Each structure stands twice: as C-alpha cells, then as structure tokens.
Length: 585
Ligand code: DON
Image (cartoon, rainbow, N blue to C red; front, side, top):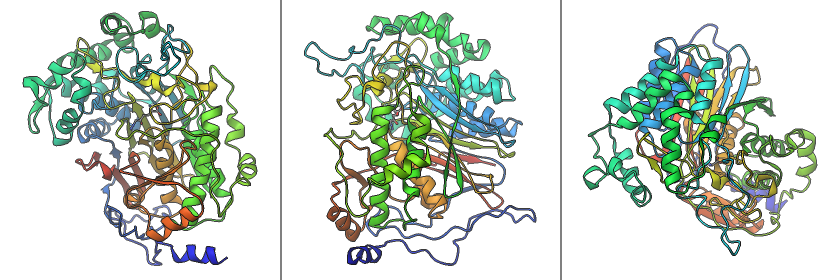
C-alpha cells in the first residue's frame, strides 16, 4: 500500500477541471457532444511542452509525412472526390515526394470507414516471390545473411499499385487519371525540394549510391538542394502507364518487364508470373472496443489490429490508471509484452496458416491472460533477443472528407529507401519487405522481433506486418479519430498510445501525439522509453518493479486526424522536426 501511494505521489499528469480550449471551430446548433479535452503536463525532461495547437480545418483534413502529398489529396476533395479518392491521390503522390517510404515498389494496408457505416480493410501487402524458399536468407552454416534487408533479393512482390487501384474501384468516385494527376504532375514537372527531402537523401547516400539510384538522386554528386526543382521522368512515365492502363500498366507490359529485368540482373527472384498473379485482398476489419469506444483496425496479414485489440483488452481489465504514472506504464508495458508474445508466435498470413484471431481479440481471453500480470512486478519474457535498430521508414496517412468518410493507410518499403535498389527504367525503389518474415524462425530480424514458424517464408505468402491503420468511433458511433504510424513493431504501441491518450486520457490530438511513448515487444525483454519521457520517480518505481528500461531517441512516426468542434484537427509527427505534412480546407 505504501508502494501504491508513492506511485500516486509520482503522478506527473495534472488533469485540470477546466477544459483546454480547442483551437478554431464555429459553434453549430446541432453540433454533436464532443468531450472537452483536459490539459496534461509532460515530464520536465521531455522535449515537447503540452498545450501546442493543431492544424484546424472545417471540412476535410489530411495528415501525412509530406505536405505536397497531402495537398494532392485536398485538391481531389475540393474537386468533389471523397476520402478514398483523396487517399489514393496521396498514396501516389507520396511515391513522388517522399520516396524514403512512399512507394510504388512496396505495399500497405488501408482501413476505410464510410459515413454510411460501411467499413472495410484492404490488404495490399507484398508477397514472397514464387521462387522464394524457407531458408533462402541463411548461409551454409545456417546463419542469417543481410540479403533480406539490402539488395536485389530482399524484395517481395509489390502490392501498392494493385491496392490503391482496388480501393479506388470499390469506394472511390473519381477516375484513375484524376487521382493520379497530381502525382504525375509532380513527377513530370518536378516539385520544390525542402530541407527534409534533401537531408534524407544525404543521410541515405551510403545505401542508395550502392545501387543504380546514384545518378538520379545525387546529380552533380550531391543531393538536390532545398529550393531546387526535382523531376523524375522515369517515374512520370510509369505513372502515365498506370493512369492509362490501370494495374496492367504496372503488373504487365513495359513496367513489369523492366522491373523483372533490372532486378534479375542483380539476382532478384521476382518474375513476370509473380507480378501478374498479385492481387490486393479485402479482409474483414477487426472491430475492437475499449471503454465504450470502437476501433476499426487491420486484421492479418498485419499483426497491427490484432495486437492493438489484445493489448487494449488486457489494459481494460484493470481500473483506469492515470497517464504518466508508474502504475499506468507498468500495466501498459505488461499488456504489450503479452500481446507481442502472441503476435510473434501465432500470427502470420491467414491464407497460409490458421490464425486464432477470434480468441486473441476476445475479452474473455484478455481476462484470463490478465491474471498473469502482477500489478506490482514485471514478468520476465521467456528467452532473450537482440536490440531494435532505429531510423527505419514507412509512412502513414489519415484522411477525412466533408461527409465524414475516413481512410487510414499505412504503406512501406520497410527500410528507408527499401532495399536500396532503385529501378532506373521505371523510377522507383524496391522494398526489402522479405525481412519481415521470420527468415530464421526463433532468431531476431532487423527489428529484434523473434518470430516463429507461422511467419516462415513460403512462396506466395505475405510476410507478417505491424502496420496498424485504425479508425476510432466515439461511444455514439461517430467518427472520432484516424490514426496510424511508421516504426516497425513500435507502430502498434505508438498508435495505441495516441488512441489511449485521446479516448482514455482525454488529451487534445496535439498532446496525444507529442506525449512521450513507451514500447514493449516481449523480446528483447525491456521497456523502451523515449528519452526524457519519465520523471525520476516513475523511472525508479518501474525499476523497483523489475523493469529493464532502455531509452531511445524516438519510437515511431504518426499522422492523425481527430474530430473537434466545428471541424477537424490534423497533426503530423512532431518528432520529425520537418515542415508539417497536414493540409485541410
Ligand atoms: O510491415 C512492417 O511491420 C514493417 N515493414 C514496417 C517497417 C517500418 O515501419 C519501418 N519504419 N519506420
């Protein structure tokens, strides 16, 4: 009990009774009840101050990692397009303006919630080429090589183009040519380089210059300068073929032939047949519930939604704890730890293995599993693993339109600039998604994830992902929040904390995104915390409970949109330090 009261004393959050003011917004007589947000105090050591403002817009909002890409989506909505039209426009535009993660050579997931109540989840994850085999990344001695991460053999069959066009076909209202037009324009005529774009290329030169992208991205031997105009004619030609011919313009004909030939010269495995048979798959979204709120999120082949649902179900079995206390961090970390044990051992491509989805996402299961959490002691994860590598890249974007349709999309080529292999004739980077398989079951991958047989490599199989595009409805069933992130396994924990910060801790979106985050993925058995994210009292209390704490620079990169009085708030990742990627009207 003495211990418990010391935890209360260590509480670092002050909830003021008076509500913090939401910026912007006109009052309408019929406005639905929107809870006033509370103010929060972050630890004095934390890099952000609470109380910052968000981008407000009355009708529609997009948050992504690139403002020109978000503006592409707004352009489509202003021309009468809905959130799906806009999301597809943003996806193609990100391939042009944000090549570190935006892509045609990767894959992703899209969760859609239409204002008429329909919801959908689209899986356009890459899949292993038909020539892939279980041990393809092991050397003669059975050790893992880096071929799943870098170079020509690291790529799965790209799903991005198939996915975006399928979403447009089923839920869009605009033509292919209309939604691709902004991306095509920016590839053909160029866009103005900012310091983030230039800096990102400078930082990844060691990877890109190893392969064929050198001439394109380092003309005159240096990255394009901020303020200069950057054109991508080969990418423009590929976008034109997709605009004219649809998926066939990518998966067959000149684009496909060039992709197969260029990859093949370096020993890549993707064939014309692999490309021709690629299909995006509609899945049944996971519907999770947390203290009266509803989450619509992504089922396998991503582990994101399942692991978020299981973690929140576990947390819900405990009385609500105050944000920032050792009690809260312990319960949340312990919930993540258990959900990741299940994730790492039981999840994989549902078209290849039996996934116990109903069980893992059930409240009953959470009640049983929660009994293994000691509220005052950390529990060791069986076995050990390695460290997580920082600085990867993926990109999430959140879109809402003026009708209240919403789209959450996360897409990736895995590492920043994927495998490093840039296909000069078609103008894009290829993914290194094969590393998301358990290339050696039981041994850690690039993210330190130790995964099992369920996620072993097999021809035509989709590698397990952590991407977690999620849409949250309030207890009245009204759209509240669209969220998701980049950051490998930390996508799951950061996305769920943005959600918890809004729905349980009543933070504004700006605070929810800025708040320091924690992460636990079972192995390595440690609680990751963002630098400066704990008060000294909370840190000592957690250590006393048996947690091994490791501080890291940043955990994930989120972009989210939230309903507020009279409109929407959009926030793009504050940790990025780059120009905000939001756009609205
Ligand atoms: O699908 C996944 O889970 C990973 N390929 C995502 C990689 C990632 O987020 C890297 N990011 N920052």
